[in-house]
Amino acid sequence: MTPDERLRRYADLAVRVGVNLQEGQELIVSGVVEHAPLVAAIAESAYAAGASYVHADYGDKRVKRAMIAGAPEDRLGWTPPQAIRLLEHEAEARAAEIHIVGDPLPDLFDDLDPTRVGKSRMLKASEMRLSQINDGSISWCIIAYPNEGWATSAFGEPDVERLWDAVGHAVRLHEDDPVAAWKEHVDRLTRRAEALNRHGFKALRFRGPGTDLRIGLTGRSFWRAATFETKWGQRHVPNLPTEEVFTTPDWRLTEGHVRSTRPLHLPAYGVTVSDLEMTFAGGRIVEVNASSGADVVRTELETDEGAPFLGEVALVDGSSAVGQTGVTFAETLFDENATCHIAYGAGFAMVMEGAAGLSPEELKEIGCNDSRVHTDFMVGGPEVEVVGLTEDGGETVIIENDVWRFS
Image (cartoon, rainbow, N blue to C red; front, side, top):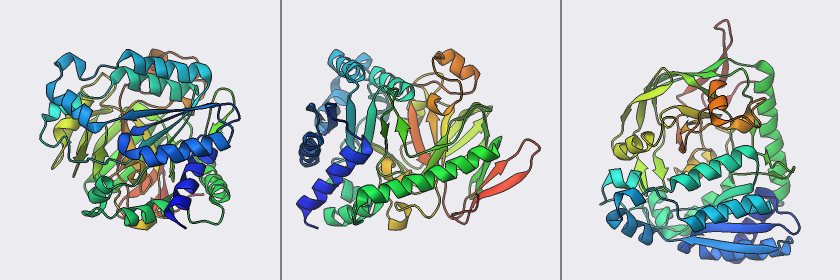
């Protein structure tokens, strides 16, 4: 296909599968200025699908760099009123949002104070967005736009066409009918989640080089895959690509140590964390080590009381279309769908029975963590075994040698 056809297909996938845009619905498309070609293609696709209005919300990393370098300390995590008003409007209007990632300037913050970099995320906006996701007040989707900077992070050279090929494979753009291929894929992931729910494991154990981690599950959390649903019934696929089945663990019940199996790219801070290792005791992350980026992770873990506890565990095996590319994308949206991952910070109330309408304090009482942070990092791969633990201590292999063994 030509580059124009490829861009159109990708935009259509984001609009029709990602947010599942409805006739008359507003759409917000957010990204940085370098993502403009994809933003324009999404706007065309959205209006063809019946959008009432498309709003482009652009950022610029160079402006953020100036803020990190020169702004007063108390403004680093500040959310401007216009950003809050846009989030409020999206929820009130039952709008959809497509957020574009793919860092065009991955080294831009390298010479800045990592502590200031770690404080530079809009905290109020992050808190509001997590709340909207949990209560189903927005249809949303994240996709990525290949560019020279991102390609250089992934391959060491600005080979954008090579990156497009990998992205296209990961999101099934080369299928005769990508939308139909996605329906089949979502159904397969859903069957995996249903099998895990039938078994009702009480905990998971990850074992591999540098890893022996036990993650306790709550009696009220359940496994989910691929699709979310808004409070008015609009189904959508938040991550393109997605290969995971996931749940919210009990934030109080993680013990042991874990070694990340892939670099962690933090686009909000413009930092890549390499060789990340963590130790947990009583649910809390008590030690962090990395060959690069450790200070940013430590700063993020100080954001609030819930930051150093787990909010998600997700299972991915070697059948992943992302993993099959053999590419480390240096972009969490893709790398977390290449292999198993966990996330420190906020849990997902939408995967807990009886959570609707509960306050953050009540959610914590039933095991769902509360935080303004939610950061995924990868912990799976061919050398990492995942087993499910029953109430009596029995073990059932779920993933072994990167193959899904459980049904």
